[in-house]
Image 1 (cartoon, rainbow, N blue to C red):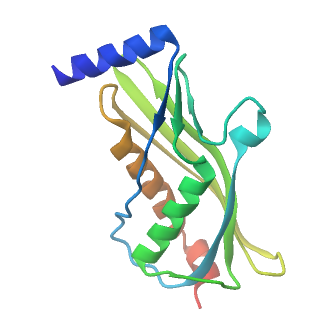
Image 2: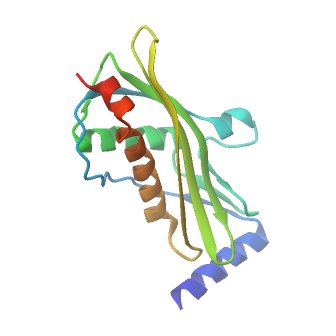
Image 3: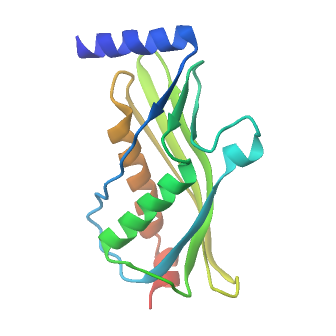
Length: 177
């Protein structure tokens, strides 16, 4: 019943071409442990930088309706990265290791039965003199039932993407004291 109602609401949104602004709170949930220190820098949200009609808080969707977060995507991601870093034991402060990069894709493909959530992020760890120690793109894609609420899925996709960088031995060696 709930999925049918959710799908009807989404179908109404699709047919009417409406948009929605979502308040999305991120809570760290990783159970990893990482030793190191870094400073969280700026992550550019490329879809908004490459298309002047695309808003900084707009999620890429494949439906006629638009989804917006309350705050810009890059600020949301930087906050999540800061929280997850502290949660796993990384010392987050002014550091010689600056973590920055690009959010290349933050999307939701919405089909009739399934929804695909994708987060593609380029992580760069560089020193204050701009020498790059780590530069890799991490991609996470998660598929769920189309009627499932997006909030928990976005949290999971963000966490898994960040963990993918944290699990990379090259990343860890760059931030290790």
